[in-house]
Length: 529
Image (cartoon, one colour):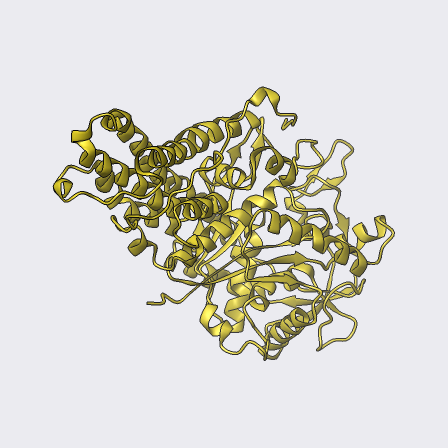
């Protein structure tokens, strides 16, 4: 039975630079959810895209001697190719320069204008171009020369000229409604540390928000006032609606099926936009608020956030070249606790690769498939009737796996989900040592016992391929191919599919190259410092 639509987003990424480990981290997390929820019988709506408007984009384009539109067009292949490389299965890729998105922005803000939530005024205050954020002077810091700088990126801020006309959203009216909403929906902001930060911020008072700019034209024009374009966040947030058919006559019913979304996955540095401004906008529009905003932590190397300016950024393609796509995905989902800052290093990546993928999962597949070829002419043995009541520790281990795995995935606790799968893989390897099929094969009187052991190992591998599929889809697909089981992505009820005993006897089992050849850290020509 269909379980309904499961909808979520990554941020709509800035086009000032190609995708890096941080943007890839968020996107792989969302794709892991997408792949699992499809296997769990959900219709998935997974929205990502490019944030192409605003002064920062116009400035970067000018630095490259290009028009803003030409610059944005030149960046689209970088994002699409990166996501294709990493196996990202988004359902919509929204560019904020698309006409369909302009239609969404104009409809949304016209609705709030008609409802009286907007007013026109002059703005004078401090603005950070890099963060696309306005700051009160009390929030600013000073550098060594006494210049006001952004508290987040430490770049100099600009004093917006007095008298510039802006349209303002009455954000201040939503202070108490937001606090009431946070109290009534404690899971709206996760993890809890982010929630505490936002509640404290809102409790100190909210100021009305400028949602338009009139000093440049690189943005979506506001239809109720010529010469004004939507401020970049007043534009980009609405891409979440565009991606599921809002204001799109060619996608009837899609928006109602997918909204409100289950999750927005964002970095912790942009949770104020998503947990304060965005829900207030939705409340004003009379739309339900997204169930959860999950603000994950930063990736750190030697205690510092990875960034191009610090010289410690590594491109996703560099790591994929060394580890392969599946190992790249698996490492960041299993070893970096989603929601917290995570220290990463090449040494740790090699350790996880060799211990959990090469030695535990990959080696299990190689050993069992090779023994099947040797002892049973590469065919899955039938379970002998004489062994029907025998102890089966692998079946016992697998019996409780769905409940633990599903609970972890529903909480986007990827580390716990991967660990649950690894417990079965480790138990299967230990089962080989306990039963010693290579000795059973030498005793004709123990042929039934050998068949029983080998069937159990092959069935455990079938089940493991399903649980590893959201993390490492290509290798799971290869295991299913070698077991002649069809397409692993065709599974739409993982609970039923992982019930014990479904591997058909007589299926051909193919051997092949190791899924994860062991790596030697000393031979890797790559630095992450």
